[in-house]
Picture 1 (cartoon, helix red, strand yellow):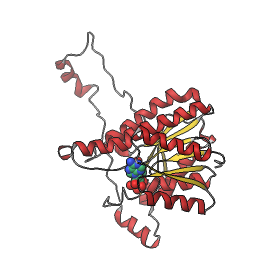
Picture 2 (picture 1 turned 90 degrees about the vertical axis):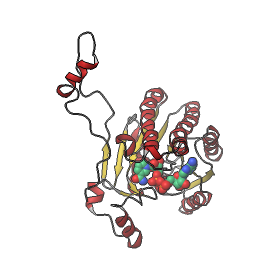
Picture 3 (picture 1 turned 60 degrees about the vertical axis):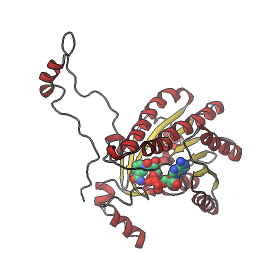
Picture 4 (picture 1 turned 135 degrees about the vertical axis):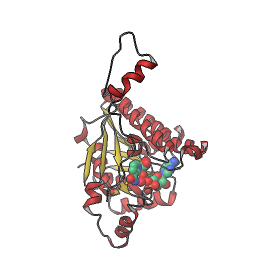
Length: 300
Ligand SMILES: NC(=O)c1ccc[n+]([C@@H]2O[C@H](COP(=O)([O-])OP(=O)(O)OC[C@H]3O[C@@H](n4cnc5c(N)ncnc54)[C@H](O)[C@@H]3O)[C@@H](O)[C@H]2O)c1
């Protein structure tokens, strides 16, 4: 994949998936603006990329606000002359069951993921439209946003909102040659280290490089951050010109296309539906095979 001459911003790329994306984009020839709230991590990432012969600069700012988004785009334009790809990856978790979730837990997660994606993409698209030669928007969804997840009201809401924005942007940005897609990753990072079934495998990998077993890489679609990075490089490239409005799953050895919500059962009643009529019809019509929800528990 050749990204020579292209310029990308990757939010939250001091570590984890974002770092893997930044490395992979730079290795393919793109110049990268590394963003993180952790200045040390961002500087280390830039040092590593430039040390390997790549082009990168750091912009340390908490994404969420319009000002931060504008600073990121300005950094790309000032340092490298343009912006071709915006990857919104920065994220935090504040997991709690609904009845214990505070306003702050909710707002913090929505601010970084949902508002951060909105503001960064808006700022990038403004510039891309002015440049006039297309662009690439790559955002981070999650299985939690696609399916719902216990203890993640805030995160599931933000990620579902991100998928909804992608579908909308694919419609709005097509004429300008700008694609918008969501990556739905599953990978070993700080964010997933504490999931009990994954923890011993991550420990073994970190200790002596023991690779994940097939049950994880294929069965659960769970691998390393590097396993996800190829999809981001593809979506940043000219090869993905016809791909837009999609939620694409990736992890370990697995690549997947997620469905979008659509009506799957319908029924009609002349003159409309009363509550009693719905109660009578529910078990034998649209309610016969209700949708499942939640991320299936890992089978290991
Ligand atoms: N790891 C997974 O399996 C998984 C699954 C689904 C979705 N995701 C999504 O992928 C993205 C990356 O996750 P990860 O697992 O690499 O997490 P991580 O915690 O390893 O890395 C997130 C990075 O974002 C940075 N960050 C946090 N808030 C920020 C802000 N306001 N501005 C800039 N940087 C900020 C952190 O400092 C950190 O470096 C997130 O959006 C996450 O929700 C991850």
